[in-house]
Image (cartoon, rainbow, N blue to C red; front, side, top):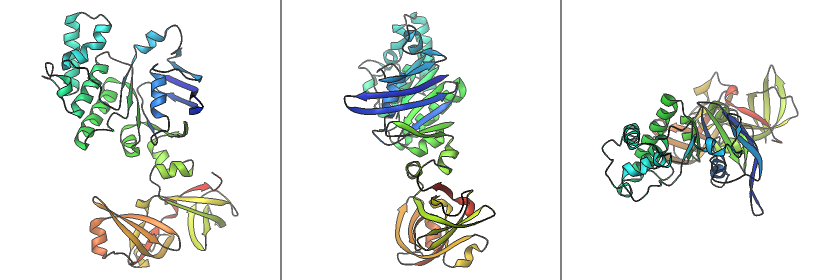
Length: 357
């Protein structure tokens, strides 16, 4: 549906986007994840014709958004911004705005505004002053103002960044419903990798103005293309070493004298980085807690950090490892700073990258 081909954007001497390319399918929910300043908002503004690219092209169903049919294309999309934007008028007039620009009859406007209010669960709010609403309610009004025009493409620029957790849940449920029930194609930017994972069919990880990786959430969270993507999606254990031997697809890696075994097609002599998620490491007080697992390392607990219902353990096993256990498990095991502990993980749990990447 949407083709982004080699898009670049420069502000003065600064390159904000560099050769961005992606294809978005009809009805897809696509999230752009990345840190602040990566270029996420700039890309959405370019798609929405709020700015012009320095290079490259964007087309919607084969029509260039900068052709003489740009108004036709622009009418097929709508955008909601990070900060809830409402006008100093009633909720009804806020939502009706786009329909008035399109010269719809008042009877049609009334019908469509009512439908949009029901969609965002704000029925009965027509006469309320929009500026008196809570942040979450204002953001729902902003979404209703876009959806009242029946867009084919909905662009969301970190729509929950300034909201409390309850409002975030309401907005997430709403945009999932819009995508699933109406078939609206959605592109949403977020710096919250887990939000992107919860909502999207596919994700694009943006780094320094380009996509470092595009794929399903499973592909990105389990097989990152490089160390930066691995770090960004929460893979805290990045172990550098050299493959000392291989046997039947199982490689033994020497990481500064510590040996670990992983599944990889790479051959002996390759320098690699082993990517291992904290939740894939099991801990126990004795090595026999994981007799059938290839990798069992003895070490000590360096630090303990509470993370809600979970406990984050930093371990010194000759290599630094981070593991996550429930607080109840940590309590039952009697884990504390300085405890001797056994850490284990399966050879299949690791993802291996050539070190040069």
